[in-house]
Length: 99
Image 1 (cartoon, rainbow, N blue to C red):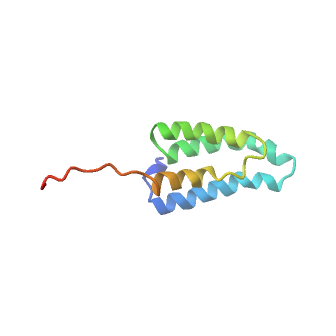
Image 2: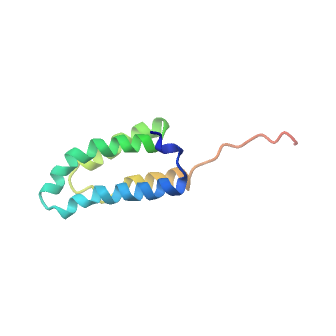
Image 3: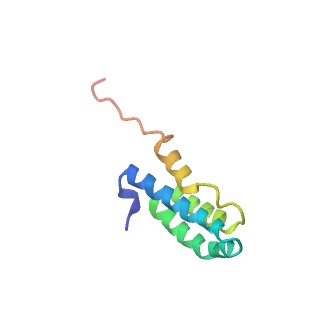
């Protein structure tokens, strides 16, 4: 399943959902941080499927560590990555053949 091929709007909504799921661990005081042991690899795999290329691999590692580290779940890594990829991306210039 290639999540990178879905529309940018749907990917944004999915990224927000994944960040909310990652933050839900705070609703369970002690068990929440333990649940991150299970969520971290799932989040990393989903990140890799959402964002391709070398940045996808690097981001997956960052998401994995962020989910494992205590009290870092509030960082909306998926949504921030979507913003960097879709809002601040530099589009390659095309050569104007008519010039």
